[in-house]
Image 1 (cartoon, one colour):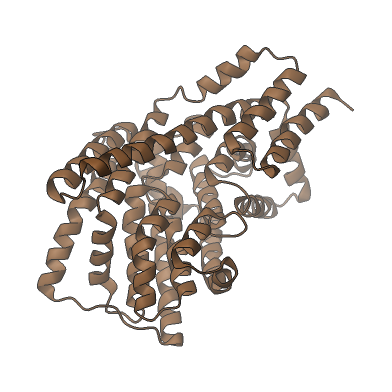
Image 2: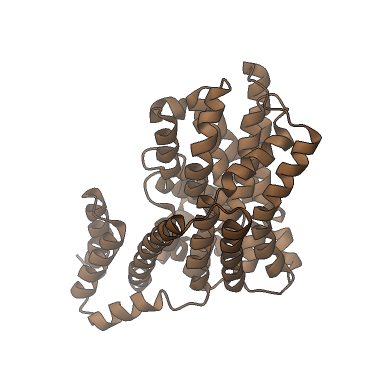
Length: 430
């Protein structure tokens, strides 16, 4: 057996074996990389250099700020205000609270940038409310977790930052802007589905608000929503870079929750810092070890092998991109989204560009694929969090999720084969 084949077996086989033993992902990546470095007799200083170099990026500085801003707005009560605002907009419709769920996910996704954060924050309030108004727990959870996929598309998305890092330094600004149309399209499609299901199944209407109440709720929520305006407006107008906008948004979120909403106590702030530091430590460890892992993948020529294997399936580029989509969907069901982005981007991006896809468009395709994965068993984190909140089984929720999966995959196909949907806005920045 050739040295290269044995090294690939140690790297990939070791990683999968450690994952099977439920070793934390960062340790699984690091230990399998260390073993492969040792087998190839590469100096360990190279390993250390690759790990440290993974964090040596100005772009990465945006990650801790976005994590902290999202935690501040979530703990500061912004999610409740967004839900009420969304309810004033669409609550009068048949199945209005489900519609409000989707609209509030669109708004909160633009603040937290995380599907799981969306489910945990908004879901803890909305799922019980939907059940109280006559929806089944499984349907309430299904709406919440499927709409949360907007969180990985609508800026600011931490996962897009990971993609930019793994892709070798793509424009964060263009990636952020590219996510808007797909995110809104996904939200609109889910709203249409909920409207059809509401009429078919006789779902209840939502709460009615007076005009005066609606204005008051809207003004109250707009203060929190201005966080998104700071991030996106600052980037589009050339006032901030993505990293600078993240820092400004964090300061604004702190000022709003302390002095305007007055919901951020000293105890909550300390708790937010602890949660943010814990999340950031995990993210940093994964990025460092995945950088060494990705270096070895390239050193062992794994991306080229994978590319040849996928392209050998058919000379038709449509078949090849469908194979990539299927691979992403399957892996998204089994592993953490951030880790997959960091591991798969160096391998799949060259194939996508060879097929004629712009790296920005492929980034959006990857986000949607893996976003569907976090809603899908057996390891879908959003699905697990949602079922925990709704106190329902995964099996009963997945049955209700079927039409939602169909809608999400349909949107994925549109984004895959109509590049203008994700590329028109980024091209306007040039």
